[in-house]
Length: 148
Image (tube, one colour):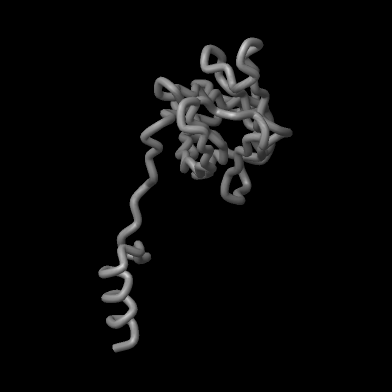
């Protein structure tokens, strides 16, 4: 009974319930994620994040962007994202992808591995002056090969 009442309250107030969650899309900034075709067990790679803001929108570099993966035994994020700053505007350059280094555990068996994580970044409107934080969910699939 209590769960039904909570569900009805959430439904009428527009609060998302656990049964009905959608992956958030940012209508102002599109992010394309690319990985190498394969990485050796014990090796390193880079996640490439290409940001495409809509006209009149920019992605800030302060506060800094964060890339994180759910805790796992295969992938480990190494350091902070490497960003290119547009010299004229001082904002994130949309002509160069952001690079996030990662490593693969040496004990990882060859195969396909999937991982979920998030990118946290801030974007702003040039004309209206507002800024917003956005948490972008990401899904990664990587082919791990044996050591050569």
